[in-house]
Image 1 (spheres, rainbow, N blue to C red):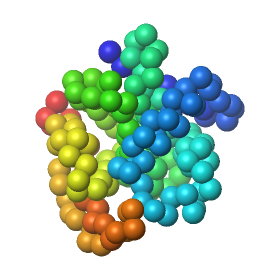
Image 2: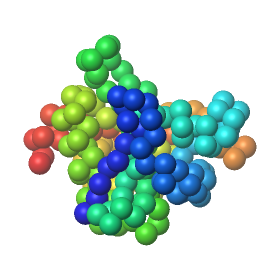
Image 3: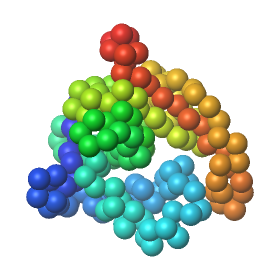
Image 4: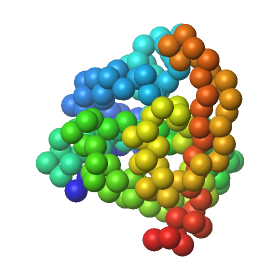
Length: 175
């Protein structure tokens, strides 16, 4: 039902799936309000620069006919060398993928991340008004951990951020 394709070959740092760049940028811009605060562009210059800086832990999500459905990336890793403990997950789906497709993708991606990276914890930070992702996270097994009060500025207003997490042992116990 879904495929995860690294945008960059991690062995050669060459772009593999350049045909998806425009779709990624369009999707990112469309949902930027839910993804980042007012400081993003001042730190990276452009949305495209931000996306390109997320490599190599950036995956394009497609259906089996290779149609772009969204993207997911991991950043803010905690660990040392080859021993990683946790990472933060960010995802964005095109509207056509909302619903059962996103739930299925979350299940597949979490298994992939726990198996391949050996992570013990995956975190997600979201704005409290992002009900769609909040529901997806809870359905995937994430649990609410805390609210970071007045953590950032979004559209000129002080904004809280909610933190959700799923732990490896909980994930495998509930599957």
